Each structure stands twice: as C-alpha cells, then as structure tokens.
Amino acid sequence: MSVTRATLAALAICAFASVPQASAAGKTTAPTTFVDAHVTLTDDGIRISRDWAPRGAIVRFSIANTGTRPHSFTFEHFVTGFRLPIAFQALLRPGQHRRVLLFLDYRGVLHYYSKGRGDRAKKRMHGTFRIGAPPKSKVDA
Image (tube, rainbow, N blue to C red):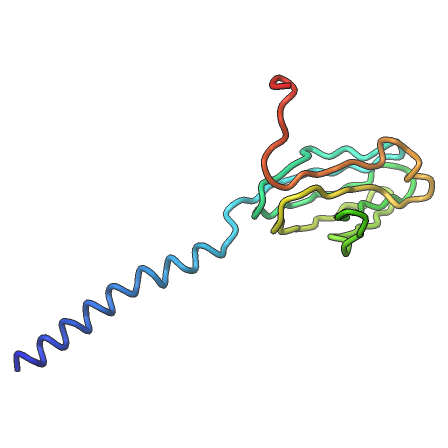
C-alpha cells in the first residue's frame, strides 16, 4: 500500500508542477498593447495622431476622408531598395470612414502615402510611422 501512495503522491506533484507552465505559455503569445491611431485624409494632406508604436502592439487605425475627392491611405515597408508587400491599403470616398487593425511584429519604419490623383506630388500627403522605440523628443535634441 505504501508503494501505491508514493506513486500517487509523485504523480500528483508532477501534475501540479506542469499546470503553471501550461498557463504561462499561452500568455507569452498574446499581444499586450493596443494603440489607437486616428488618420484624417484631406485634400491638402494626411494627419495622423501618432507617428510610432511599440513592436508587438496592435494598432487600431481609424481612417476618415474629410476631403472632397477620393484618397487612399497606403502603408508600405521598404528594405534597401526592395519593396515588400503592402501592409494595407484603404481607398476612401469623401465622407467615408474605415477601421484597420495591424499587428506590428517587426521593428522598422513604415511609409504611408495617398495614391489619389495628384496626391503623390503633395508634400503633406506622405510620411513615416516608426515601429519600436519612441522617437527622441525635440526637447532632447
């Protein structure tokens, strides 16, 4: 009988010891940060509420076209002359709104711009969005 109790006790210890490891493993894969970015498309330019987010975050882009013409909001990533697949592209008619979720799984810079007619030539119709550490503030410079 004592052998059976020892065996049961060993099995119980092994079972309890493996439970915390199983629950901790699921927590490491879930993103912990959600970031909101409001994007306004006008006939003169693109206004974005923030220009960076931490790596591993999910960004909720709320995109609105308040202009009088259709505009697009395109995110792309460039690596030493190669253009990787578009992260996303949204074409919006005047007055249209759209929400897009984007998981930021790498560090780097995303370029955004509008592909609307005549928009690429406008200085305020493009910019960059940083993934990783926040940019240095103007006070530190």
